[in-house]
Amino acid sequence: MGSDNTLRKKNIKIMNNIFAATGIGAMIVFIATVLVAGIAASVLIQTSMELETQAMTTGQQTLGEVATGLAVTDIDGYDLGNGGLVYWLVIGVRARAGSQDVDLGQCVIELSDSSTKNFLTYNPGNFTTKTSINGNVFTDTFYPNSTANSSTTFGIIVLEDGDGSCTVVTPVINKGDHVMLTVNASATFGGLSTRKDIFGMVIPEIGSPGIISFTTPAAYSELVVQLQ
Image 1 (cartoon, rainbow, N blue to C red):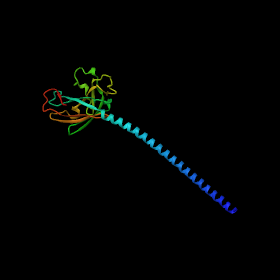
Image 2: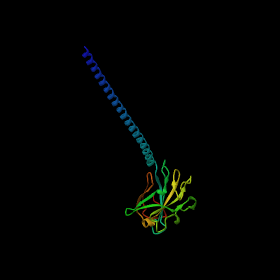
Image 3: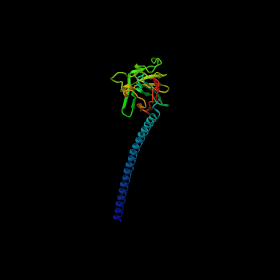
Image 4: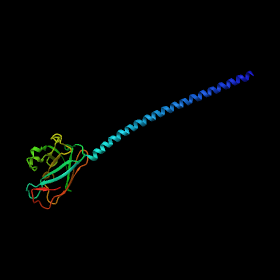
């Protein structure tokens, strides 16, 4: 009998040890599961926040790209009475509806006559305020005339700028503003003859460009010629 009781006690002790080991193992697995789940949740939350931020930034940039831009309203030429060659061009531009501010100082005019392609940048030396026009936009001082930059730069004539945002240092236009960009076609193309195809763009830093596309008339009957 004594030996049976001793054996029974040993069996109970062994079973208790097994149960204890099983419980500790289950607890370790549970804690590990909680830790892994916590780490995974943290990674997912961080990733979702980064994706949300990126989506908002992309959305704002997309809206800016779609809404912002320039529209070309008209293009006129002046032949100076030099045997049917347009020497000066004025390109009327304004900000598109709903556009953000457009810095003309960062714009590039691209012009091509199928033989050459020219890129023009802003020249602060040919900035003309509204009060300085004196009724004639075809004044030689309004156009790049120096041999150093006349073929690679454009000037600005301010026609309308209610908030005063378009200045010689920061020529920024926004809603309601209207300006003209001046180009020395004599320096750029050697003058524009009749029946000449000209195309290009006024490319802003951000947004849609203004399109330039016209053909010079078959004859220049007037000094001022409407081209587009």
